[in-house]
Length: 190
Ligand code: 5GP
Image (cartoon, rainbow, N blue to C red; front, side, top):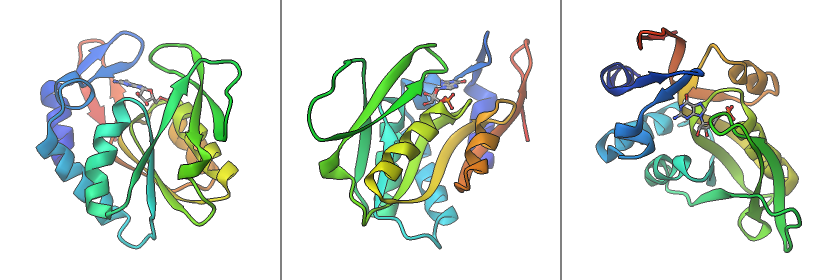
């Protein structure tokens, strides 16, 4: 998606450890007009797919998922991150390894909000090694619901996640795929 690529080239910053910072429009300050364009593009790409719910992960996925949900006219559920060892109650739980923070945590969704009748679109801001997306997919599978696909804003194509997740058979639509990032801060697209 050219609009997004242009914005990454203009405002993205490359940090050590293959981290792309897009805090000025996606991860801290949020450009909601851009989010609308992203949401419309997700809807266009998944126009042929039945979707009854969007599932994302706190915190950065929530804003984009909510705006996208306006175009799909479905509710958004976000998985909560928790480090509690014993989680009580009726929840689906899986494990995610954070790429940016380098730690492992559980994610949970209440059984109240995911049902076997649901056809779920996963949405997240980044796809790197795939742990977040696979963790979300596991919650959907535990609920017996249908995985309709995944919408990613920025995929870092030089990391393993895209291949790993697509190999499970999940349809992944990424709006921008970064093929490499130079030490001088230049971002290249696939
Ligand atoms: P994965 O689980 O695919 O390794 O990483 C995806 C998650 O890590 C996303 O939810 C995102 O929050 C975070 N993430 C991974 N890579 C980057 C990056 O380069 N920049 C930013 N801002 N977040 C990232």
